[in-house]
Image 1 (cartoon, helix red, strand yellow):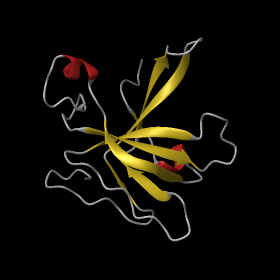
Image 2 (cartoon, rainbow, N blue to C red):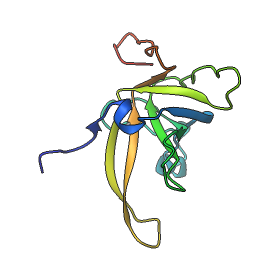
Image 3 (tube, rainbow, N blue to C red):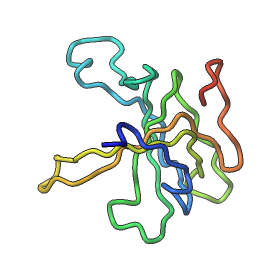
Image 4 (tube, helix red, strand yellow):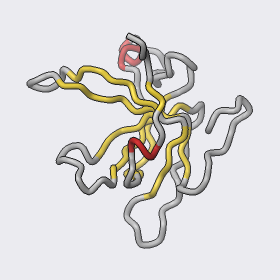
Length: 140
């Protein structure tokens, strides 16, 4: 197959009506490392080795089906990313993800297996701004 690994996608393709952060940024835990008794059991990206952080996001698509409006985007960053500040009068924080990719996989945790997508980003920022760059040139 010609396409292997993560598929690079723009924010406009994944969230054409916008995206909003819900809740807090949390560590993605590596359960194998945790069961092995390792002190640092946070998951890391297989290609870069950077820590992974989970960001719950509401897709603002008015036609999103029930159960598909909220997704998790994993952000690669050595330190916990800070979501954009909330806007006055809004219950959610608008967000734009930098370096957004999607990786297809088969979700077998349901009664009937289905195609699902894992979303990953190199950074996040408020709409109209870009994420700050680290020394390595990656989004923080």
